[in-house]
Amino acid sequence: MDIREIQNLIKFVAKSGATEVKLEMDDFKITIKTTNEPSAPEPTAYIQQFPSAQPAPAAAPLAPAATPAEAAAPVAAADDTAKFITVKSPIIGTLYRKPSPDKANFVEVGSVIKKGDVVCVIEAMKLFNEIESEISGKVVKVLVDDASPVEFDQPLFLVDPS
Image (cartoon, rainbow, N blue to C red; front, top):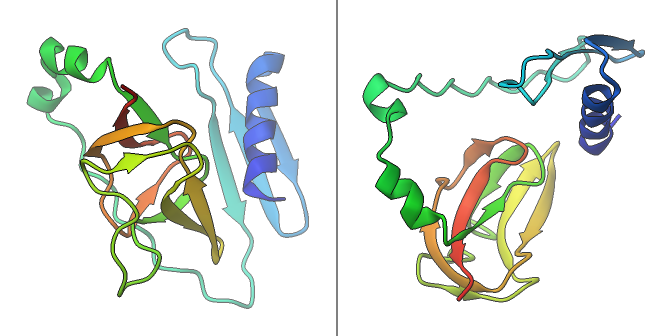
């Protein structure tokens, strides 16, 4: 089962109204739990991989929890970014801003991009996926560091479409 099938399964379970679904296959086990609370629109998925012959990669460090000062972001900052369009990650993996370590970044702050331009690559399961821009505009902010783990639908770049 690939990442897109898992994402589609999560969306299907969320729309179906089921509160818990368990799926077991030969090499993995998935449990999807949802809540009926309006404040939690995204279901949580737990994936348990069974041991395999290959060693597992080292776990990524967890991000520190937001402090109360960070949680109370100023409203003015939200107004500033409201006019920008966010380029989001379509998959889970490790983001790389360069095509290779000895090359320049795909985009920098101030770069003008067109629809279809590659803005980064995301490595998922030893495959490097080129992430193309779905909009044209000017990159105003890079939200993720090079070689950082990213989640599905995580904001990567802010683009000014004007």
